[in-house]
Length: 371
Image 1: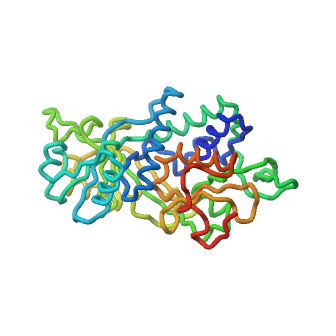
Image 2: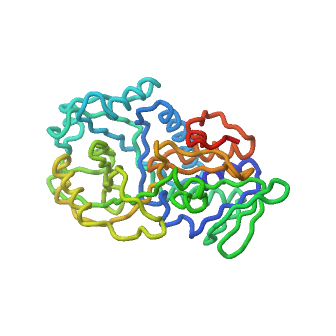
């Protein structure tokens, strides 16, 4: 979010510095992995419209940088109940005249024979579904920011923000350096509870495990064992919490669980992915995608979610410091909106307003007074 905002601000000729406690991309940040999900499929038209806006900006970024940021796959939402997250997503997309298909199990089987259609009642197919190549995207944003004149300050951990004379803001690093500026955007992800202690009771950081598996090679080219992006979609089965991707990283596909994990300190959450989670992934495959039941383990990673109580984001002015904008609490589903959030932040920092109605992201919902 910070890199996207820096790109937008620099495009307007603003003098910008982008700082991070680590090398960028920060390997422990929530935004760094081989892949993130892009989809229009949300049950709320607000988020659908925000995703449509973001997709146009991702395509623009691809064109400007020449980097491969999106791989189109479509997304299949697996449903068990007639009134559910999946049906609400279908209704929200259709309400905005966006393509969405309600598929019975026979239709799912014809299109995607990899799934065991006895395990669910129907599918909702979102053709916008795509793999966002996350680390590549962050690198592309940072490089574009540099090209536009942004000063990129790495390995410089910010520990405090202070009001400076003339309604300016001082940023204090752990080495005692002080950077003074007119406006600040704090997009500190899982570290927001530490840098912004007033949000301590409104944010939680949770440890989310994910696994990369390599499918067993089948010489007979049976379509049930074809997990390439042009034959197999991103999938989401949100009753169990599992979601995953076709093959996209060194011959492996990814599976993770969106249900909130254990609360952790982001600076001490590095224990390895447990065997219990790996076994639960295999159990999910056995039930829903049998061709992956014997897939070989290739890589495990840990992602830290930075959650609000309602899973809506926080984009608002700091309640005590003038000129400090906060963008945090993306609750495990924010990456896809990155370029749109960057534009919103740039608008607020330069003009004090944005064309997108962000009232639901205000701090007033936590009883803070709005600036």
